[in-house]
Length: 168
Image 1 (spheres, rainbow, N blue to C red):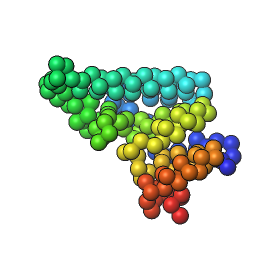
Image 2: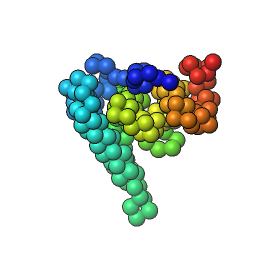
Image 3: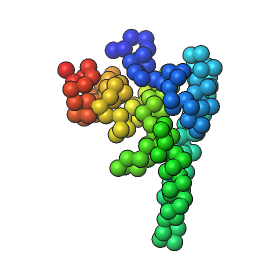
């Protein structure tokens, strides 16, 4: 369905001047992506750095909100939110379902997994709730159709609304 490279369908991969690249927790991974110059093995290392950074941030979020003796330490929570969430360019987003990665990071991870041929991981990074409607959700739907998972792809159509090529 895609020809040679389905990864070229992913839009909004953060460019060299994207604000997310200045976030301390992700800076090293984006530098590694730049140094990779498209080489899949080097991109794989960059992906691992980005995933490790994201996992560390999500772990810190869980720890900050963890109950101790049936109370949550409000100062710890406030410091965490101020440091990682309530920023001009947040390292994490707070949603109804919990913390999520910013769209730029999810897009980058979807692209990196796609470049390595890890379709399931690319799809999972393309489907977080804060990305709908959006081109990355359309990418996930397209990959699902290509993998014969049409029912799952159709479930994403309401999230697309009137946007995207799948809505037509």
